[in-house]
Image (cartoon, rainbow, N blue to C red; front, side, top):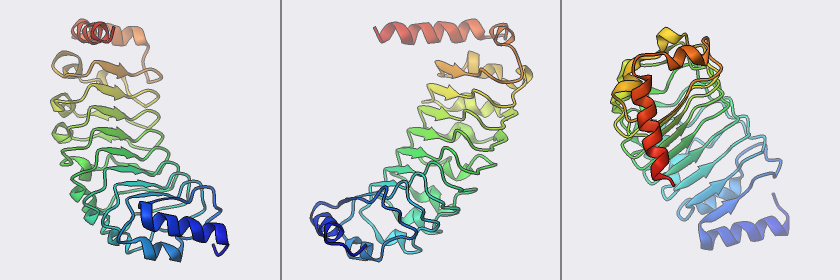
Length: 238
């Protein structure tokens, strides 16, 4: 990355704290990034061929927005949790199969998108992130929604196109959850906890493309309660 246009790009980033290096054909994290550690707030390295993030990623203490969609990244640095200002992380279309334990320290994270990765388990390290608002784990290989999920404060959760066959009833305890997307999973009708319908705040529930007909879903106990909630929310929008 030695051409003059790129050099100007880095010089500008020193002043703005923002850099976009998407679509650059990068195979590794640029060394020039070291000069931006003390100022960088926004970094986009999407659509490259990067397989590893730097081990000292946590040195970018001011990072608020980090985007590295469509790369070849398999794992995240163990100390990523020290990026305490991080609010938005987008890592779609990579090969990530788990999140490091330090992820639970990203207390300011509001939006997390990990669609099209290799997750087989729901990442429980997210449970205590009190400011996490939108979570996208679609197009992974997650098999169940585990106990303890009721601790989460998300308003929207996208789990479309996974391999989910079990949902913990704890999900009804997610007090802020309004939108739950579960299309195209492996759910039998008996795997839908009726408490989602009767005693949660979920007003949008997508379950098409599972192992039952939608008619069976509409016959579940509590479906009318859910529809009343759905209709009430829709009326407020108009």
